[in-house]
Image 1 (cartoon, helix red, strand yellow):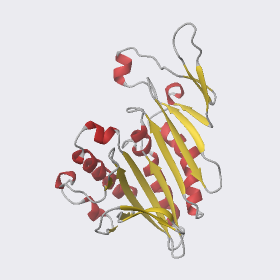
Image 2: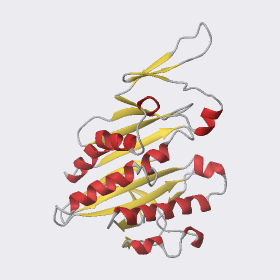
Image 3: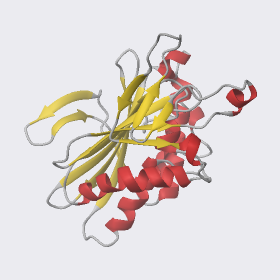
Image 4: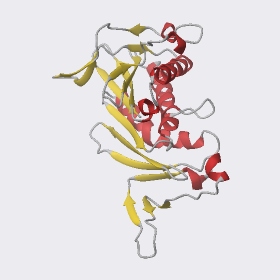
Length: 260
């Protein structure tokens, strides 16, 4: 992302090949105060990484797309909207046609992965935008329901269901799970293989999505649970979270996964 950081995203839906993109974020306040410049240069769909030194040659990396937020000077939420329209909306449409799809973010700490997926109140992230897109579509499709699951993989490879809070401190007044109808199976999480469904996590709870506002509050509860259960900074910085939106129909299921 910006200042010092950039992030890569990977998207795939249906029979199309995976798409690899880079998003360069603008400098944050601390970087501007320190007068730090952007350490990458964007040339179309190529990113130049200066190696330093007079004899060193810059490395040039090519991607399918490059989004340079630092140069584009988007207004609040505009950059998130562009990413959703061009990258995630086609994946969501593929899910409505019965294809599984995924969108993964990777990058250094502070590169903007969580911001890209979750965003802020003024600039919703890709996850909430995808939820809204699927909920709007489900109103015009009979027998379609949208479910959300949130799985954390810690740096010690422990699986945690963030929809099942282990601490009452993560709840604000009432249980976030009371907002949605949650399907909870009370046994340890296990990664299993199914001959038709493929890889899945047995015991992972799902919440039926009614509205974007409900899902936003539920995700805030998941973030509190993740923060309060962390023993050290490494627990947060080295763990990963997989958000899955699953469409359930009377005859078939399809899913859209977004990973941080």
